[in-house]
Image 1 (cartoon, rainbow, N blue to C red):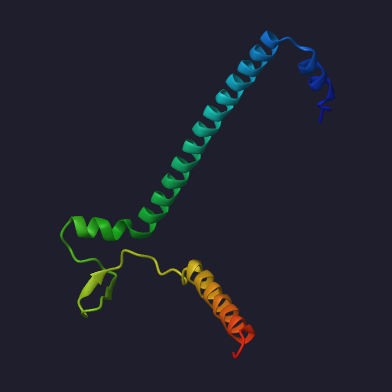
Image 2: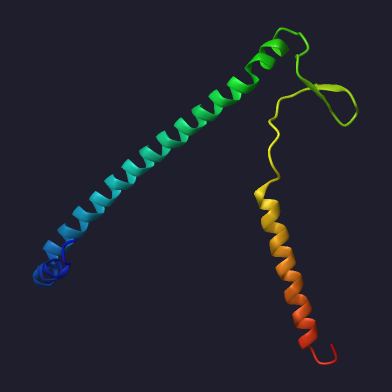
Length: 122
């Protein structure tokens, strides 16, 4: 990585007009890079969404075709009322956010207990 000292010396010795031109040039360059990143991010999100759609169709496409044709799907699971419902969701492990919430709650409760013990008469 180049040392910033020559740049600092150049900027220090530059006129106001040169500083303004330098600043505008760098802001334009930053804006161009921001646009490139935005385009790359949009393409990444789109590719990720297409991949997930393909995975979902690979897993549940046959059921969707059967449902569109008006036939009951081959795979079914009972819903809460005991009525057969198509399996349209993959069984996932428990949400990791729930673990985070329970950890946070247990830490919060232990802080409250320590606070109550530290109070006079507690």
